[in-house]
Image 1 (cartoon, rainbow over the protein chains, first blue to last red):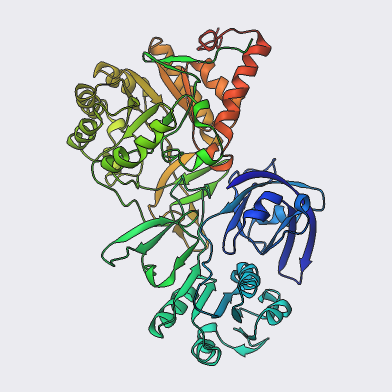
Image 2: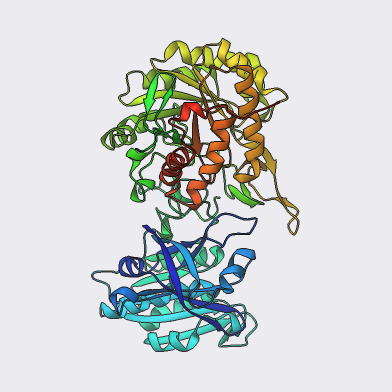
Length: 268
Length: 306
């Protein structure tokens, strides 16, 4: 983790829903692993003071001094609205990279990436790293409607196979990711599942994966105070290894990636 | 020559007046990735209890204008974990430690104090009698002079180091509670803990915190804290005070010192800027130089009131 004043390299609006910021932050880009996040400080002159956490969408390590990180996000409130208003050469205070990212498996070869809505964001960086490690990658994206699917064109390119579902049927299968999950696992010979999205989706994917004997790594989202492990706001209820006791682990530094089978999904 | 910002806190020399506010710095390990801990006065660690406490359900935090509400519930791994894991590490970092302790009963406070006796590097105990997130919120020790005196007196008798009582601002007269703590043997006071507050999600018609109400911190509470430090310093000018509440920069810190604080604790600001403690410490020194003031003691309680 370092604190860095980065410079906005580019800003782009993606469709109606999403914003893409590319920020020059060489040390963070160099150290970042898929599943980790950065914590951005809102500009001054506002009445809110806490940082906002964002998954790392991609890193671009070409050129030592100009290496960038990319974040892709939707506007949820005044904080993210402020970041959506940043333009080239604006500066931004970043802490990162933070947390335990996804683990790249040593033995297993076939990986299925399941993303719900904006939760698909960290899976792009992961897909690139998995492919670089010579793994098979398949993608399964779900969202409320077509406009909420994150970059389906690139998702198709990254996956050996890909499937999309929307709740309103505006793209792909009408329904939710778990409708298609068993069939995808079967067809792709999936050995590891990586998932990121709403808690209800992560819980369902974890249960399904566990039942079928496929390990599930989930990247979770939580309301955060500090994002560096000191405030104890963002705790996740996780069973200990023996399954005898629930621990309150910090999403920011003990996660955000956890073993889906160990999360006590019904506890808060 | 650089100005001298070292202080005497209840007989202990600290190299800087800047310390950390309990619960806003864990035990220092995480923040040490960003700063050199030797540049601050002391680490006031997260409150510890006799047994590990799991804390409250989530959501534990709600952001509010210029501040935040929290209901963490003193999640901690207990005093024995602190002695086995955190304290040896802090000693290795060569930073003085103020141990914040909490409990549900006077007996629990005594038990934690017993464990801390002769703990190396612990220069003081801060008695957290003002956490707004205990199980029985209606019986907060710091809301009653007798309850304050019973805890502080018991800890003082069991402790081998100076004892600071951390007081609640949610009282009619903070000087009355301060007096009770001092009569019971407190060597100094920490002012203030969070203000009780509540926020409601109007779309769900539900409290934003699982704990319903919580403690407000951040710059929103600073004037309340400065007033508390000022009033207590006026009433007890010889008592060392650790002032805190929404300090975001060195100017805020100096405000507390001019109100009567000996040391200042940084809390919520660590969440936003992990390098803030050292930055504030450095800039206090710079401020003294610019003003031609030789040491901090000359600024303490300097606010002029006609």
